[in-house]
Length: 155
Ligand SMILES: [Zn+2]
Image (cartoon, rainbow, N blue to C red; front, side):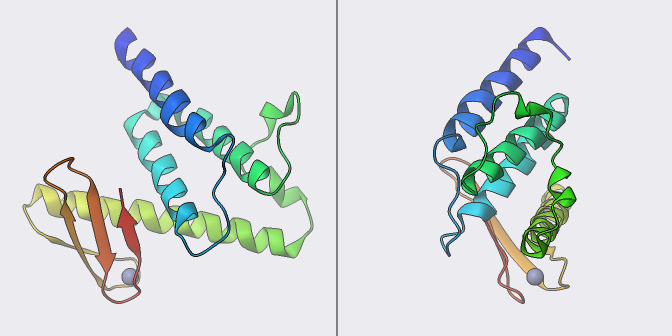
């Protein structure tokens, strides 16, 4: 990698990921804000493998802030999975949901990427359904939807 790539990665993560969520973490509602958050987290890590752990820990902190925790001095050692040590079962379920969402997102994105390389317009969802996708001509942002489970990707 080049110096420029390292610089760009940190800038991008700092401004467009951390800067976007540090004070306004996603809310638990039907707006799809969490979905968007996980998607951005995943695509940021894919774009900058160097920052994978950084993005994971930023994400863990943002999730803590969304829960009204976080902003604890020196707490940057919190591994993304450390919440498992808490016995609250709701929270465990929430973490499982997060992992499943990220996992699903990564798999669907992979499928879309493969389809795009072949010049196809449909991909496969983890539910087995057909994912229709396209890119906005103006900014190349991806949008995709599974016709079976309704899973949506909006960039
Ligand atoms: Zn599906």
